[in-house]
Image (cartoon, rainbow, N blue to C red; front, side, top):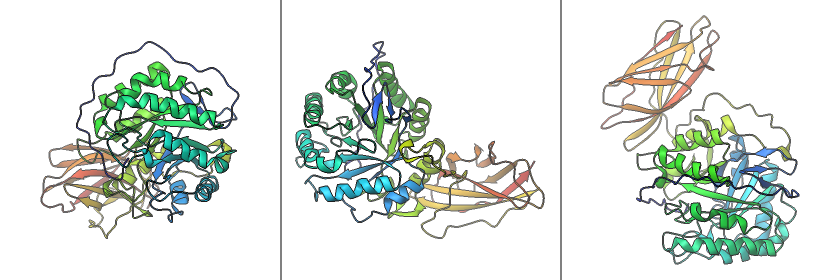
Length: 450
């Protein structure tokens, strides 16, 4: 992602079906490597990225973010670096980044952001210049193949002449290998990473064949181009059918209907065993893409809640790389409440065997996030149902940790399989996103236990 949100209005065409299946010859493993469509560690264990992008080059002092990102349950951090378009990250700095990744048991995807939008942005570097940057860092990268993936250049071609991507990417891969790099490589698509003209899709085989070590991962960035389930599944289907390795190296969330369908994206990634890395922890010019409020890990935004604690999110699906040993972290079943300000809250409802309290944890123009806390009464309960009626036309969209349905202005939230049974006085919570227009007062709730 560039430091501004790129919105592309082109519609994504249906992807052509394919029958050619691509396989890679077995090679002696040097650290992280590709096997078929998967990433595999040197010990043979499959590794699926569940990660977060961190804008290190612009916020080099935010080194605590590595521990905070790890605390979400992430197993990967994609680190933004610069070789000179912005303040250059030196070999000493990059060595420290790698050390922070290893200290926090995160696989480190290092990317050179200088190339963003080449051909359309006059300040952008070429992929060849990016390779020169990596060559200058070789002394701190060599020997880190178990822990480091090199993402040669971020979104290396804009929308002007995206066809140049193929030759430039082939040359970059070959130059990396001829200079002795043994690392797994990652290459981003053109069209600001979104490949809406299908240059990467149609030329992926040529790029993969250019790697003498057969150890290159293709990376798609999913934003406005992928705003429907069909656009996401058809693109992923093509790569699966060809047997090509693919990761979703960046994506945002569907804060309005024109944006990426993040729920389908994460669901499909989990179903297919594809890695994903969300953009980004903090620091965006457009703060709606920040997962935290100004790098404060205790204040997850709506986007942060969705990717960390939501369905198919990081906490539920991430597994630590085995090079670091076995993770002992037990993911919570409910997301924390992280309001930036003191939220409006209803008093607990009265009802049969349980009570429920509603609080608005975040609000923006036309939208909001809410949390409902359910508490069992003096006796244990096996399940619960919370109901309320909106008075001002509010509607509920995405929900987590409950099955939420609406009928007109009436809303019903029912427990899911893992949070219905509560001991006497026990609590759980569920959350959701909603829309509003005019005013957004909190409703009165009724909780009924079963």
